[in-house]
Image (tube, rainbow, N blue to C red; front, side):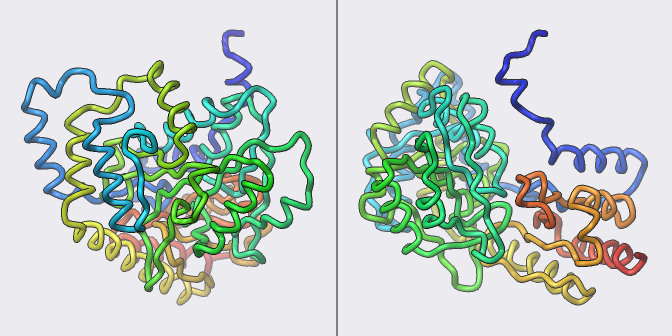
Length: 392
């Protein structure tokens, strides 16, 4: 009776089902290995925390901040992009701070999409890519990601589909959550060419910019000539600096899109707490050894998990990026579906994973492991998984 049509369009958050079961199991005293939610488990680097403690003691920093972010913070992310990608960004017109990438994407959808507009969204995908469009009143056109295409969006197939009405927006994210798929710069060149030819806006979620392994370096969408003409990129400090709870990210690129987002946000929030912004400057402009150390932790965990899965007969490839492992359900369990299979791993093996269906219907047949437990805990989880696979 009281909820809006917007709320009615939102289904129950399916990834929450396994999490709720995990909480129930832990309440019963079961030691569950949580490889479900992608929530970094290690602390934020000490020098970043120390900066927060220093700045928060100044009462002047306790007042409202500015919605688009401190100028020095915007200069800091411009510096990081110049250092990492040789990309020039204007801190005044091409950068805005957001309260995490999730908030940034949600408000971008509200700023760009009118009721009835369509957006192209890969499937499977990180849920906010899909539901930001739904919340804004738009229509989602799901673009299936397949194993045959290495879970990379097929632009030629989209072009041939001739959708009507014409989509206004394309949301992509590489390195990809949940599939861990990676791309090279040529892919982004084709995205820019596609967007210009089809007059489509691009949003690229670059959450896993730094979490890459085995010599792979993730390119930025903004490295492509003309990328700023068609879209924006989101970068978050969550994964690179273990700053999940701090909620700080950036939208970067097309100045008209950034301006529209800034206008909307000026009505919606007063910006991020100033000490957090100053700490983010410290993260972006300080030494980056901490990032390399974080990446190495995930690489070791990846190796322990994937090598262990392969030893017990679950054939899985090592991802080149992200903090996840995307695993096709073993053949003899495929008929269960990903939610029932994930439930079985939890109830019988004491291991929580995310069912692929939670990322869209084309995620069915897979589960996602998050590398958010230490190596010993992962080994314990492998013993639980082995018990389940051998029992059946």
